[in-house]
Length: 341
Ligand code: SPD
Image 1 (cartoon, rainbow, N blue to C red):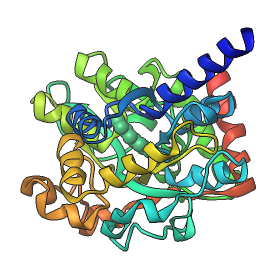
Image 2 (cartoon, rainbow, N blue to C red):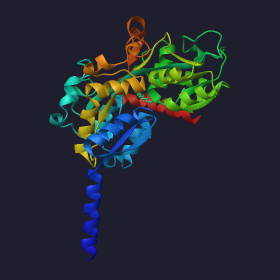
Image 3 (tube, rainbow, N blue to C red):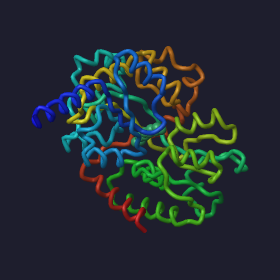
Image 4 (tube, helix red, strand yellow):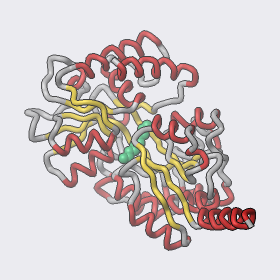
């Protein structure tokens, strides 16, 4: 009898899991109307959990999340480490015909040749958000954070590569440098910025944006889409890409190695890659789409906005964050010192 009950419990759990898709994604990165449309079309319930950085997402996956989530949204540089750690399963491309909609620029990326494990979701950049009502002139440089002679308090971003990237570019170095001296110099600058009286702490991108909107800082290191969306709702805030340059990212959909419902995960990825759904996502998020077939449905003013679709001088100062393999340890060590001192 006990065995029968256990079997029944197991079968009903398995049936419930088949009706559910679990999405683990950055906060404020999904239009609820898209989720509702997916649920209706496939008769699935979507459960969502949120994270604020690649590091948090990776830690959660390593602590058992690898068998709890169906779709995750990792950034470019972290995917090779996730593959090496066997945290991702290869995509069944036969189940994602809409992969063909990706702009060739975003298909077959260097961090995942042949899109074996991932499909592009959204792309964007980091930069500085500021309070128009608290500054005399709009900022154009990382100096507002890293030059101790400047005034105005600021929120730092709790994300290694973006925050180290800002310090590196301010010093005139590449965001992807492997030179220990350059990485250490950036760490020193960041530690000074953290210890300054002007610093109000570290936050995830969305948290930093929220503190700025709430008026508790003059400047915040944020991601462009979050800032541009906030600026459309609050005339006192704006976003700028510093003249020294900033980090460019491509976020991607992927399926954890032991996802409970990989079939639903493939359906979801294919759904997001529909032209109109891809456009709806970008029009809501205010991040750029990697989906070429979605472009005709993107809001015209967003397509013309260089802070969303950078061209010319803005594009020239952006740098893709790359996987640094073993040299990532240089950044981890320096970052740990910055955070712990
Ligand atoms: N609110 C959504 C923010 C998504 C940002 N992803 C950034 C990845 C940077 N490597």
